[in-house]
Image (cartoon, rainbow, N blue to C red):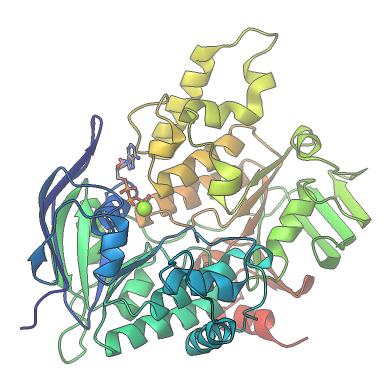
Length: 503
Ligand SMILES: Nc1ncnc2c1ncn2[C@@H]1O[C@H](COP(=O)(O)OP(=O)(O)OP(=O)(O)O)[C@@H](O)[C@H]1O
Ligand SMILES: [Mg+2]
């Protein structure tokens, strides 16, 4: 057998008292896609950071291409042929796409002469190779998150790396970009590179991976072949889930609600030029979950931002519980009983240095602390309650947001808005990056909230989630609402074709 690209044995790593990795062994072969699976906080990102030289392990050995390496730095890892696509793109916003790609790939000797034409040609070729329709001259700041992610992918591809690591690369992508990404992964495999692929979406693991290693509580539990040499499936979804959580998990969606109550939110011809949305008319009733589907750039997040007063509407009518309202600021939205869990938790969600209990109580300060007296006990109780209810993995309510894994940060951001007990809850990709166990917990919580009379507007790029959770599904395209389906009759096919149909 050929030399493995990576061989890790008994890797350990602690952060203070937290033992993130307690002994992980892992191998990556040339020409394989090796998935890494585990619950939120299992240690996946930490393991990746050991491989890319971002963290020094406390113990164990790391071999790259058959050679044991110690004191690995990110620069050295890159030189050894390791490229990583993190969940958050790390590009220079003021530079163009081709400048970003050029800087990353040309190795950045400070005074090196820049060959603009060549740079542009390279960028063109790489973008074409992944099938991304982006103009290399566009400044990165005007690209959406998924588009930036495509640029990151182009960089990884262009670096000629033999080991490409992807940490939840599809979390912010919708179906179309996902297909592009899958094409890139298969290309890399065919060219003999190895890919380490982290995702909470089991269907992706079954579609892409050759092998999967399951981490639980900082330990590698098992490495299994996903399919045999002949292509037969070797592993079932149930087996994989129980390896991961060590118990049974209901992966089915909760039952839909009964008959909905009064109309909570009603929009008539709502327009917002700054957000690129026009003539949106819809209604959400108490007890109802309205799923908002569409491709990246269809205007779903923009609509949420209009409703939450971040980019207020220019015209049209917004009615809450039968009353015409103007939503001019987030504060106003909160006082009207609107809660909003945004998609990009790093930018709008959790404040990393702040304890999680404070992160959760931020939107309910006036309720929790009547008068001026700070009631730490109340805040702590709130923290403890949501740590318990959402199964947040943290050492306590005083743990800073930044010490939590990505999925657990997402739960903190959800808790903040659940604490406000809103009438209308807007969720933007609520289970993005959340593991399967916690995902079904969150689904149950959303359904329970609806059952208590909350109106829920749920944006999701996870098609099975939209189909499984929504009482009705509204599809947006090009900033407009193009079709609405009853949840019980909608199919993936119908929703996708409404989202894709050229206008
Ligand atoms: N910088 C840090 N400081 C303190 N604790 C940390 C730090 N980074 C990670 N941890 C802890 O290490 C453990 C593993 O976290 P890690 O980010 O590797 O999880 P993960 O498997 O990537 O989870 P997710 O699926 O949620 O992204 C968690 O308990 C987390 O709280
Ligand atoms: Mg992670």
